[in-house]
Image (cartoon, rainbow, N blue to C red; front, top):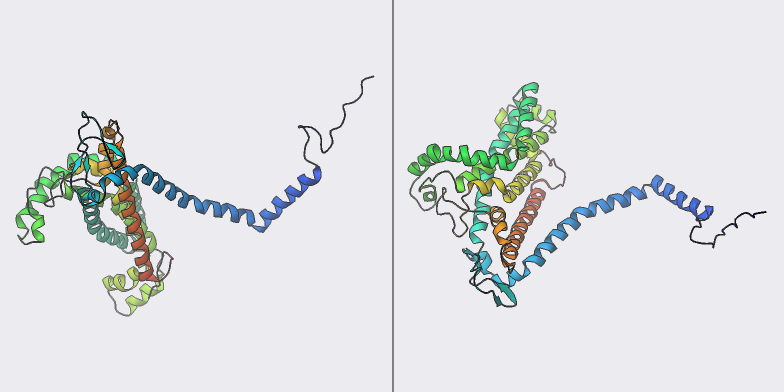
Length: 363
């Protein structure tokens, strides 16, 4: 008569299951943690660390890739104006322990100037237009019409940058070069500062077109955010200001905009981040002049991001890999600029509002 299989004890073989007492203890601990909120607290803490870890990973990866270029280029990379990949047909040479093509030399000063100049032009145009559009949407237009215009504004923010760049290269840029830029160049006074507005209008590729295209891409971001902020302003302070005899303009300047001043600064920073890092649209309208600072408002130029996207393909053909490292150094400079701008903006928000909330102190 066949006997039954022997039972496996708590110290048995590999197929042994945990004792019921341990299983119940684990289940009780998990349920108590869920009820007390500790599990959600741990989960939220881990999730809050992800952006910091991602930022640190990107910085470390760029720094490791760019270290050979930093050792070779030195400070010349920040103040130099040449972008020369060197002679790829000659034998590579080694300088300071870094192997690179013969006569390779990289200077990113024109790229830094182009990045900052195009972003400045975009903000000078986009900020007043965005704030004015938000005020009109909230305080002037009927609700249905405001919702319709706001919908198109949000759709404009979702248009791919390559489509905006194609529009700028084929339509907007030539129109600026034929109708707007010549008038500005003729009528700008020939004085040391405003003389920068004079010069050859070109064919529609250059600093002015790049800044205007960036403004078109920044306006929806700043306007939509500012509109949502203005809607949060209580109605009583505005009605009280109007009852005291303030005009609509004075009410907006003294009540509405100060109430949401910190939030508007944050919206501008979001738009500035888009302008600093925009790649395809600027690459299609800037002219990609790597080695020279624009001599007038219409001259061709390049930004850091546009240079990276236009030069990366040829950089992979460099057998020494040095050009890729130079592009990584350029990307590191762009990231430092972006982080510095965000830190300054955060300090400005605290100075303006004294609070981290999106709506400031108000009156």
